[in-house]
Image (cartoon, rainbow over all chains, first blue to last red; front, side, top):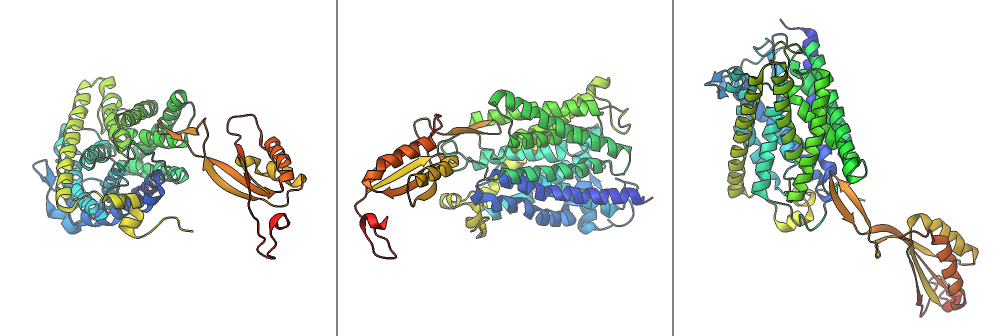
Length: 406
Length: 112
């Protein structure tokens, strides 16, 4: 039966998750050079339109529609056929359409997250083609495996509360593939690329954090105690990630930085995501602390390896999703969420194995398919900007605009 | 006539202006510039990666004075701009061949 409170909460949560995409646009936009800020923002913004269309006509049915062999949803719900006011099997107290639009926002932000890896060097049209194809070939199947009724990873008992595998690991794996296919920015390692507007990045971080309450809290799919648990875990994960990153960089680099605070918060939030509805508050803090530590060193390592993941999608989202998924296998407790499972520290070592398997399957699949897809798009359309255009910047070269005029 | 170019810290602009005005300098031009000397600039850290920033913000103050005034101006500017720390800047003195006041057409020292 439809509950007004649950419906209101999920509608608001959907709006909060949508807000994360413009938040991400600002988060990323501030970290690039001024000549690329609009192009970077556009790569996130455009997903709101492109992926929403894809979701309505294909994605939602592929992800959550009637199961086909555990691998994908059928197209029975394409064009939102039968997705109306009545509740679905996913959430018995909200209209099916509300569940659909809530999930749509997750589908939108995931390909937008990938763009941080190849920021400042990719042409718009091939990027748009890649993103839609990636949603169809990577996001939708993985979403079905992990969250869809009958999905094979869900059947195996993989825990992913709000998208550690479905969102963060898939985009991290795609980010890794894209850096390998597309290569480094012009003059990478010879010139220094300073973020052009860190206040913009911090504003974006704030919006992401705000939206994350809908992302994780809403994943309870009801305005209930579980939503409260996930909301609290989310905040604790974010704050602990921020504290740890800042502490470590203060120790190693001599000064605490705002970009470090923002990065640590996002790392903590991404890492708590898969575990948010399965762990208690103290474990959420611990998960955030581990996220801040590991993601900091991953990003430092990237710089040493001269690997041009421009805005650290692999080191923050990919690694965060991976660690959080493992942490769920350690700290999940049925006392927190009876519908979940116990992890290693609550007497169920097998859960850690299941989580590890989920990481291998999802990470491996997302990497291989993303790699092949990027190669194909590059061969047919040419992903990379011409050297002169890259020098001029995406804003003028791709969009005929400049962000800052006199 | 001499052209005196003082490159120093941005926050010393007012001190130098005041010092030169007090000894009778009637006009000057200030611009925001960037540069570095032997010590180079400073480092910045973004997500754990260190960036060396060579060009640091400085202010350049230029004035034209009589030959007789030049030494006084240099000394006043040096005292006003000095902090004793690395990065205080430099003063350059150059000969000026001619000065023209655009409004009246006056030339030479009268035009300064």
